[in-house]
Image (tube, rainbow, N blue to C red; front, side, top):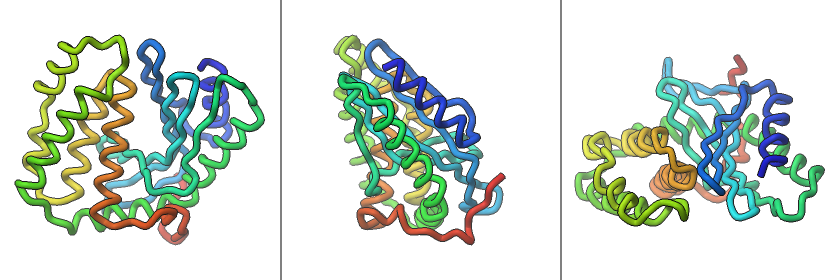
Length: 226
């Protein structure tokens, strides 16, 4: 795990981004790194693109990642053609570096498309029935997507007591996605944080009917590098 995280840090630095945020717990590690590129959702509400990784059981998953700067909530975008995995049990630094650099470059170029998805999500209403079902699925997921050292009692306590009041008050798809990522931001369990951010990405994808690979489409006029 350590050689991978060191390399991830070096590549993030090469793209002039901040040091990766890392959440660790025993044999599991979540991390995300950002590029300098930003794109505007609405006035004063900017996204910053990057890459999220989940390292566990000798494997690293690599996915597109976006961060809302106004609230520092992050979302994993599952609708990409370049999501990848690395087998860390057979360490090949050159291959891993190539995968991470490709991911960072794609994240930089495709960020404006993600901003467009968030703008569209503002226009899509949600119903109380949908939100109730979503909260139930999230609480069920929280009893399962945890690291092995977590006790069953602890899993059930967290699933029962996590505050989803912002989700229940959501009026749009944008609100619902933001409520899930706000919960994920405070979770100390790396696997659960990954799962919640990925669930938020799936929710966005499914309701906007985003085709696979659309994240690679470019709208460079929306790009702002700060």
